[in-house]
Image 1: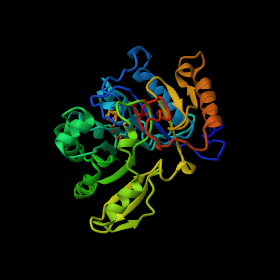
Image 2: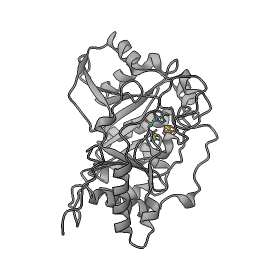
Image 3: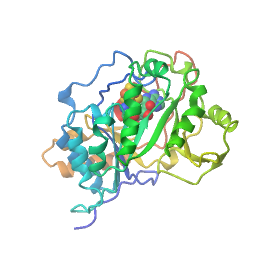
Length: 340
Ligand code: SAM
Ligand code: SF4
């Protein structure tokens, strides 16, 4: 049998990375991510774990070698560990018909890692990204609208104790965690963890105007340079982050700059929501219904056709901006649908 065609879009970008959202639900309500009264998808619309598994393997068959489970908060989905285990068993194993999963990772807010870190590591996951915007308990409670900082810090400790490599993700927020960012960098590096800073993106209605807390990373970088020596690094994680190494700590610091410096020309990924909608671009509307393909009479052929369609519609770049007060979000969809 001929090897299945790899996923290559119109701009000759090879898609090797899937971000798979397992739920849009979350136990936190980060103010930049979703409103307090977020309405979640009816459970009946969400793919079953078995469907998520089959879908993931359909991507692997087309050359996707890295899968990140995300959400919402992936660890609030009941039995998600069964999916982690099922996919974990595929790591490093050649699939019948072609394809091989090389890496399975997770992005989590960390609140439930105390419970799950060991099982996740035992399933074959080696690295997790944990979001942490502040270590100030009162500010955390304000930002996430839940008093969950102790659980997150316990989660980080549990992940490290389980042998998982932890990368911290921090959204830079003007007037909120702005002054704390150098300390967060030092905290992450002090644990031997990398940290990546992210510009807030205008995705989905929230209860505030994002422009009030939008902080260009160009400014953050200047502030960091007054305390640390930033050495440009050739390190690439295959994603949008650009890295520096700090001379003082030896640790890695990434910058994800969707607004101040576009990075779409190297895009290697697509995203699938918990209802099986493939979004070809985080900042675009182009989508393909993978759930219909999965539930069709010939799922394998339909999945292949859907993936070819995704490659045909993947746009060159996103076009969102945060440039004036009162602007509607660039997209109605929240980040919690596609998982970042
Ligand atoms: N709940 C998990 C977590 O928080 O890590 C996974 C999903 S969350 C949507 C993934 C990442 O997106 C988090 O690091 C979060 O801070 C970030 N994020 C959410 N909304 C964002 C926005 N509007 N702009 C930039 N980053 C955002
Ligand atoms: Fe939940 Fe993650 Fe969104 Fe925060 S950023 S509300 S933890 S999905």
